[in-house]
Length: 132
Image (cartoon, rainbow, N blue to C red; front, top):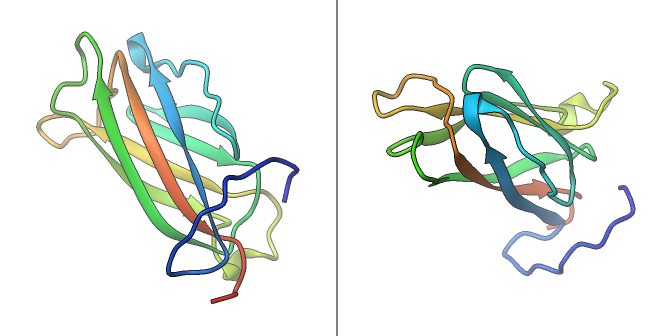
């Protein structure tokens, strides 16, 4: 694991860490400055599709939550869903590369669309060991 300071967490499952923070989205779906411990970058891969690149590889994804905080306009009624994750399970440890998660923003008709002028708040619960 890369050197950084994580806050201790207590839960029913040992060997997990929480990566959480804000992804600011501006006009045209442009990603603003992201400063989330444990995340190297967030990239707009396509319309409404964001790739969250992690600093490390994990043994599993235990939990996922994402919410949209609307700004002045552009994302009212939008929702977020996870569509893909890579290098976040024990079966992929032979591959090179760190983990990532892809999320989509959906408009009020549940079609993939860019959320504009908003923040996506992301929380990932990731498995770091087989303990527990």
